[in-house]
Structure formats: C-alpha cells, structure tokens
Length: 291
Image (cartoon, rainbow, N blue to C red; front, top):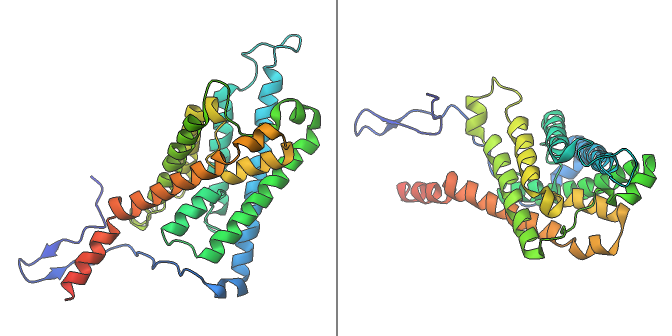
C-alpha cells in the first residue's frame, strides 16, 4: 500500500513529537504580484500558453472538420462510418492536452484553458496578474490556431461549422450548461489532484503522471458531451472557433461556454481545497493549537 505522505503520526505517546512531512506545500500565490512583470520567465510562460493553445486548436479543429467531410453522406461514396468518428475526435482533444501539458508544464504550468487558470487562481496557485494574462494569451492562441485551420482548409471549414461549439438539436440550453459545468468540474478536479504536492512527492518517479490523467479526463468528458455541445470545457477553445467561424447561432449560445466552465472550475477548486484537502479545517486547528 502506498504511504500517505500527508499524515503526520504522533510518536512517543503524549510527548508531542511529530514526524516531518516528506513533501513541501508551496505558499499561496500573492493576489497581485507586480514583480512577475519584470521577469523573462513570466513572458516565456505567456508565449508557451499562446503556442500550446494555438497548436491545440489547429489539430483539433482540423480533426473535427476532417471527420465531418469524411462522413458527409451527400458526397458520393461516403458513409456515416467513414472517418475517425466521435471516439477519434475525443482522442484528438485528450491526446493533444496530454502532449501539450507534458511539453509546457515546466514552463507555464500547462494550463491551455482559461477555466483551469481560473480554478488555479481561486486555489491560490497563481496570481491575478498571471491568471489574466494567461487567459489573454490562451484566447489569442485559440484564435490564431483556428485561423490557421481555416487558412489551410477554408472550404471544409465553412461548410462544416469550423469546429465551433453550440447547443446541438434535441438539447436545450439548460442541459448544455449543466454538461459544461460538470465536464469542467471533472477536468479541473483532475488538474488539482494530479498536481497536488503530496502526490508529486509520492509519485515523482513517474514523469508523465500529471499530464496523463489530465488528458484522459478531457477524453472522457468529450465522449459524454460531444453530442450535447460539441464539448467546450475550455472557453478559449470555444472563443477561438466562434471568432473565426462567426455565425449568429454560435454567438447566441456562446455564453454557455464561458459561464459553464467558470462555474465548474470554481466548484472544483472549492471542493478540492476545502473538502478534500480540508484547508479551512486545518487552518482552524492550527489557530486553536497556537492559542
């Protein structure tokens, strides 16, 4: 059985001696850290978020419109079974997140998603300045990545909806909002769990451990919600496709792909930090022991 490195066992009966933790819990990030703006590492992280989100949208949008073209039954010789299918689209999203988180985790933290950034901000993992500029970089990268996809396959992009998110026929906006909230909760909760210092200390010998469950969470959520909304759970992904495709129906539903992920990310951050890690209870216990 794996050792729970968070538990500090009391030794020596009532002697009050405790064993030290074998992991380090980083201090909360400051709300506003203006010093970040003077560091090259901060701008390197912004560039990494921009490029990662660009690549993410380029590959995934091309996968969507490529499948739509291959399975278009109005084209002679095509059948609905042609192409990668919904399973392949889900793999494209999950696989790209796995790859990109693995590549950028050591530079920017590998957010690639404003909902993840917002959740980590609420969990005091990043400052407000970093969170806001990450979101700007992610949205800019998503627009550029979708723009590249359109530039390479303009006819298919326009014909098959540009990979944009909207509420699909047969579902209402309430259902779509719920799908986005729960799907983002799954993703952001996985991010918190996979990057927990306790887990990193215990499993540091497995270098791909954090990116793998994060990518797999994206894959699983896509399987569940592609039929409902095309799966957003990433406001930058939805925003980039909406800007480039730019149709009224897409913009009418677009609020769902911001509100849903924000609510889901907030719920995941609160759940992990205050229920799973019980940070509020620990702080209260520490306060009582010192008084």
